[in-house]
Length: 264
Image (cartoon, rainbow, N blue to C red; front, side, top):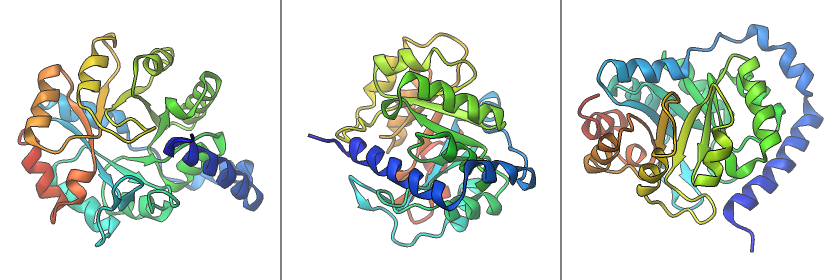
């Protein structure tokens, strides 16, 4: 039986093929000289941590396959400004349309409204999407190990770094982590949500952290809903967080960020 991730990846292959017919990768690359320089995604996270604060990647997300509409009143630029005022280090913007009701314009709007670095949050399986991300102004891209084989992971990472973007490599089990650790010069994200059934368990981050050597910046993703959740991760030694739903359900996302991360 196919999982949600299988369905998303299948659709992504169709989507990339459709887009290549409209505009080639070479055309996208040719226009990148007009795009603003990257803002330094990993650097922004590390600077927050050095200042004794949590490095928070605050997510702009309207909906998800498991929860449906999360924020009906959805204005990316306003949300981005609220996050910046609330102390976020970086922004994450969902650009997948079919499953998360996201869009590329949301990333453009959010980045233009703040000085924060932005990651394109999507299911990237082709270098075409990496080039596309940079053309939108993305400062970082997400690579999900569960969606890629080792050769794809290496190629997409190399492509992103060649375009001066940072890379967040996401894992959710020990086998995926082993593959991710073969890649130098990347941020490691531990997703507490199993992308095959969308169940979350914060213990995933705690358990996998012990297998990660000193050096890479580690981000815990998904399932952070309370100050107790934040403290559990801090106690485990994780200082960077990607949080979306908890903020998106709050009337003032930036104020909720401050409430959860009282060190921010």
